[in-house]
Amino acid sequence: MPAYKAPLRDMRYVLYDVMGGDDLVALPGYEDFTRDLVDPILEEAAKVCEEVIQPLNRSGDEEGCHFENGMVRTPKGFAEAYKTFREGGWTAIACDPAYGGQGLPAAVNLLVEEMICSSNLSFGMYPGLSHGAYVSLHGFGSEKLKQTYLPKLVDGSWSGTMCLTEPQCGTDLGLVRTRAAPQADGSYKITGTKIFISAGEHDLVDNIIHLVLARIEGAPEGTRGISLFIVPKFLPAADGVRNAVSCGSLEEKMGIHGNATCVMNYDGATGWLMGEANRGLQAMFTMMNEARLGVGVQGLAQSEVAYQNAATYAKTRLAGRALSGAKFPQQPADPIIVHPDVRRMLMSIRAFNEAARALVTWIALKSDIAHRSADAKERQAAEDYLGLMTPVIKGVLTDQGFANTVMAQQVYGGHGYIAENGMEQFVRDARIAMMYEGANGIQALDLVGRKLPKDGGRALQAFFAEVSAHIKERGADKELTAYVTPLSQALGELQQATMWFLQNALGNPDQAGAGATDYMHLFGLVALGYMWCLIADAARSKAASADGVAERMTQRLTTGRFFMERMLPAATTHLARIKAGAGSVMALPTEAF
Image (cartoon, rainbow, N blue to C red; front, top):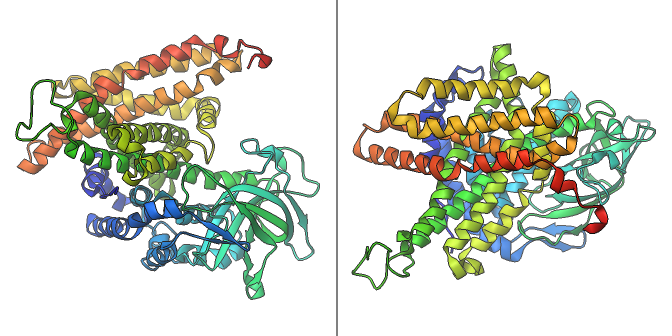
């Protein structure tokens, strides 16, 4: 049976020692979030995840959700676990205190999200989608809508969804056909069908609040005519009268079986406009950007839990002898952890996990600064980084997170293919993160086509300047040469790739399209490499601490060196692919496929 142990020590190290999380108390509204308050929150979250949520992961996958007479039943134990989760206040931790929330910093909340998604991704999607709805409503809803819906979303007695996709449109939301007819009382009648709606119908809460993209009658075609509506399952002002919204069916899918993925039908359902008419995408993308960072965390989370189980298996599974001679002669064979190829896989996953957690924490701190800093320039710089790094975190962390679950499965050999060991579930569950909230190819196009040139490339240049300054500052330090020198080369390759796009893609956009995914992963490698330089710098300064700490710091330094020597060199390959251009990619005629 698979297991999970929250990596609290690693989380605290990244938050405090690497990223200076103690400085959070300097931000307005965060004065109380000292280590003395944050550490018990993380510890309690770990207990809930390990003892309440994780034990339902496999059983929830095996049982799945059930669709009966228009109602969706979640797997056995989910309702009781959600009740415990909600009563513990976990749905409220990152919400505005004005509506009953606890106002936890994003940097801490995303660490809690990692634990939840490692322990049970399907379960975590229910409160995760609700928080996305909360973010959008908090930012764009009228005061009346906020007062009606936010307290219930915050306390978890109601949940939320995000309803974009239709049978004929996914990425191209300009093709939305769902219609909204204005009513005399200011409400709208919403008619249409949405598909792939996570947590669209379930039995965990009293009411479900749907955020629905639709086109008001007479609105312009395309994305300029899309509005966002709040459509509750039950009408709050009508003593719980059922709205004309229903689940048509459950999707049969590869993974996340414990989460209800629904076809939702709106048959003249009553809804209310959120934000301005015909500007629904602005409000929805606020929710989606929040969700994309959360999905990036899902990639890390599945990678972490898969690594933990693969490492345990590798230390106990006996097979053959070490190439350099028996390491455990008292046993009939050595554990497979002695074999270099097994270690290669485990080290690859471990090196990614540590750097990815640092990257998520770094950007979450930028989010805290963007929302809380009293300095306008500091807020703007943080917003720039958030916009630039969101597609990188979503795309790279989920691509690599999935690849890591496959590697962890490979460590098990044939036993990884057998359901009872849990590894094949991690592979299946991790796969969805590459596709929803914008498929990763779209993330790459967003990065290259929108984020790089935005504001004259201000965010990109700031990132280049920050990494270059670190390289220059630490370049003469011999203890850090093994980290700084490879990063310098990879940064140079990223800059070359950027210049190649400027010189070759303006006249032929296919050049950018053909190289976008490689550019996103090249960018991700540089970002992760930069994180490893920060991790190594902090580890070096603590290496002379007490024995246990010194040993852990040495392990971090070794893991970082592995990343620099065996993972970061992939940057050269990505650059070569980008420079190859779109010629062979686009050469075949359509009918040849």
